Amino acid sequence: MNVNICASINAKTYRELRLMVKKAEEAGANLIEIRMDYLDKCLDLGEIRAITTLPLIGTNRLAQEGGVFKGREEERINRLFDAVSKGFNLIDLELETKNIKKIIKRIRKESDVKLIISHHNLRLTPSLLDINKIFHKEMHLDADICKIITTAEKIEDNLTSLQFVSQASKIKETICFCMGKQGILSRLLAPFFGGFFTYASIERGKEVAPGQMTVVETRRFYEMIKI
Image (cartoon, rainbow, N blue to C red):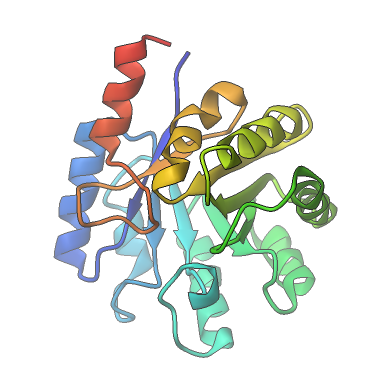
């Protein structure tokens, strides 16, 4: 089984980003998430697209969903539109984004980019029933990929996440696992339960979410268990 690993890159400068992309490629990442909420605003997304042939995800994460973007919402969304026009392959759009239907309609009209509709719970892992309600909201928005990330308060929360992704992935491409140290198990195992891919950092200290392992560590785990 070939497990897809997405390397999340939180570089600020173009030079740092190039180095991190190279490390991601060498480590065996299958796709790369460019966290635009960390990037200097002056950087050209077209130049970033030209750095690698790997699929790129454009993410401009809101602070309340675990990101660092602090500007105006119009500015945040326009940056995502720019990523679409510059050839990014996927766009991550939060479920709670204001005017999300209008934004999705424009993206669909202007490109064939894949849409990840995401939801992040930074406090806990809801019940399976509540997670399914979120999933159906994302489905209703015609997401190409439904993404629901929760926070593990206890080891059993991993089971909730894995049970959900096992069911949901039969209906739609789905990403679901738990953040935090207690959630590392679901990060690693989610792809075996149908998860579309999992996320990893480039190196220690460059994590964009709690509990995130590096690409090298994640790939080594999969090689070790030979699945």
